Length: 218
Image 1 (cartoon, rainbow, N blue to C red):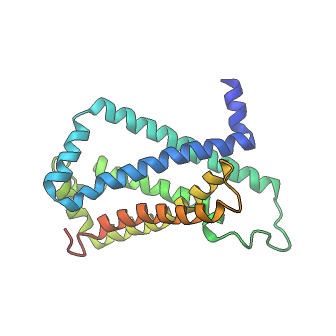
Image 2 (cartoon, rainbow, N blue to C red):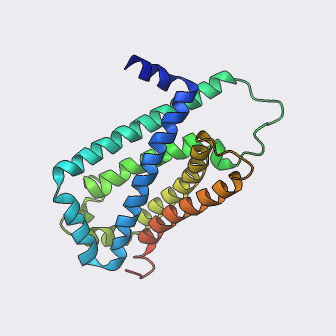
């Protein structure tokens, strides 16, 4: 285990760790969004999906714990790399050499930590019922989602979180491609378009779910 810890502490190891955990988290948010889109199909569909998930509690908790570990490693590694980068260049350049970098690339730590805060809120909302407890109803997920997203304040929080997730995913996918060695004149434009489309699909799907009640779709 010592060599694994030393590898993780290295710059290359940290980037590989971010790439692997980032890919796993991307797959999760994609599947999570696709599952929640069943909300638009009506109570029977989304409630059957929720019942299927809860019918396997052991597997569900293994998945939850695994995701929490992956998320924790991803966040911890991201903070460590950001701290190391700042320590390596404690004084800014006289001329900003990162001028060509967009806001998303320079705000990955911010959008990542904001997403972490949203995940905690989301779990406290729908999974644990610690906030907005009057709307919590694990036996009728469709009603719980409809009542929650019918509140403009809650909807605004969810939409804002998805906008930040969009920027985080877009740059994260591009960083993953770079770590895999796809930073090439032929592939870079394709990766930029693909990252934009994937991030927009996930964030857009989640925003559609959130606003479907206020827009009268559901």
